[in-house]
Length: 307
Image 1 (cartoon, helix red, strand yellow):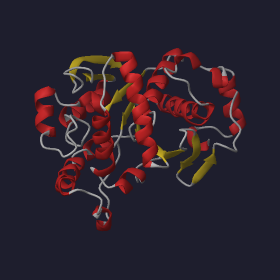
Image 2 (spheres, one colour):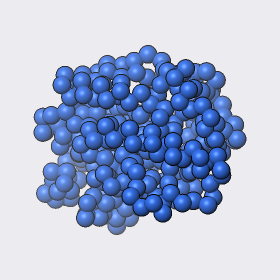
Image 3 (tube, rainbow, N blue to C red):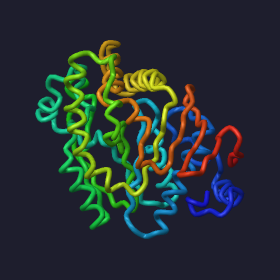
């Protein structure tokens, strides 16, 4: 807890107990949430925001995780909880900066997984960079919004938002991922010829994101211990999306998407983010197993939770 500005775990627990502990803003979670997420992830992230607010300068906090891990749900809750605390926090996703439909189609044309978006290269990085730099200067974040339900599920931009913010949460499935230095990581006999041909394009596009990654003040990495678990969680997420928005999905599309996540970039790059300040290991049941910060390590199964 020292890295979050607290001299003892006990003092930190008392602070959050006074606000309701595990019950704080519990009704704002859109889905049932495990206590480990609240005690060892959500509340510490709020404490990091509280620390940033005390510094008095705009702070960009990144949350990176494979699809289905729960990063969007977490960030959405943190924004809602921050409102209850009177804090000015905005939540953005890399997805908000997808290209408009026509440019998006061009950027994704010919990819072997036939995904309509999500690959490196599908985002308007100039607009994202401008939005973040302007926010640093003015305290106002202006960003487009992307509606995945439009164009029969292929998605398109849908309006924009402007908000006063002292802290911005930015999340994405390859947020903070950087090109590895070991050439052996590029060798993967399981790739098809088309996948092997496309991967260098994805890697080349990934390099362009460094202008965004370099602006992160902190990066939290929610890491699935097994990539297959992420695929299962993504299916659950799409079922929820269908229930709320009516957007359907086919098993084939889901299979193609999961295959893209597993092969577009070397898997080792997704599991080891050198820029990450905090790494949160998730179990196969999506519970928090372990938290690492630099050389510190906290086991969620053995530490005492607040509330």
